Amino acid sequence: MHVKRVAVLSVGGLLLIGAAGDLAWAQAPPPFDFFSVSPCRLLDTRLAGQGPALASGVPRLVTVTGGSCGIPAIAGAIAVNITAVGSTGAGNLRLYPGDGTDSQTSAINFVAGQTRANNGVFPLAGNGTGTLTILATVTGGGTVHAVLDVTGYFAVPPCVTPASCPGVDTDCQTRTCINGVCGFSFQPAGTPTSSQIPGDCHRNECDGAGGIHPAVDNADLPNDGQQCTDDVCIAGTPSHPPSPAGTACSQDGGVLCDGQGACVQCLVPSDCPGVDSTCQTRTCNANLCGVNLAPAGTPCTENGGTYCDGSRASGRPRWRR
Image 1 (cartoon, one colour):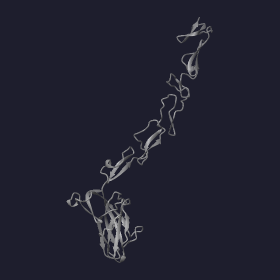
Image 2 (cartoon, rainbow, N blue to C red):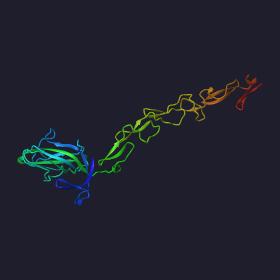
Image 3 (cartoon, helix red, strand yellow):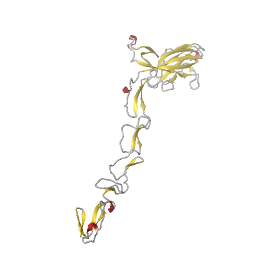
Image 4 (tube, rainbow, N blue to C red):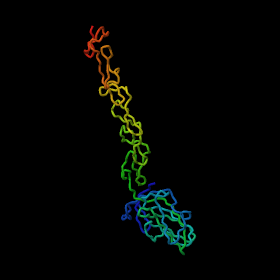
């Protein structure tokens, strides 16, 4: 939870905190924001994997950011409760940045066998590692267990609104600014984008990680504008196989598809207009319609005639009585 903006001044290994704008902090660095977290145990040297107890004069490096306590990499300092447990002698604990030097400022003092707690705000390493050093001094070169519970962190947020974050918003990702930390919100994988190429047998989709990739979409049919080819997608590849012979069409002066992708006048003579008679028969040569006229004098009986005259008038044969 984002609590408030404060001015922070480093003195030795400790951070002194006051209300932003207070004259006492006129020389302080730019204001930090404080973000509270649910109390989280950062270190307990009594536990397996986190021990052993701190030995006098031997510094212990603790990684604070990026762990289970949710302290982000932008944190410059943390607020902690520190507890000394089971010391073998009197002494103190000192906390300072992981890339720094001993501040000689005690965070908590204790005597032998005493369990004692205190709280404070301590700066982290400035080299981006997010580390903190804890150093014990115990009389007689003894040992002491230490427990650190983090309750919040201080940071100069890199963002106030998503628009102040680097990057660009797309169909598949939008910038976010949460607790001063820039990030991205991604659309689920398979979400179609607004930019598509019609008829390419693909669909541009989000990949779930902010990227865009083309997915095969065999329903995104191509269109070559030809009536005598079929428009299909085969495994994401546009294809235009010829339509079946005899399919109706109306391009290039034709009426039927020839089965090879062309719109033609005819496939067989009966596809041509008109009717056959003794004096003329329809023809289909090279897919073009024509008429074959009977020689003049050919006997006929149509239209009350007796002989074909071997010619056409107004596109029709003539008969002679």
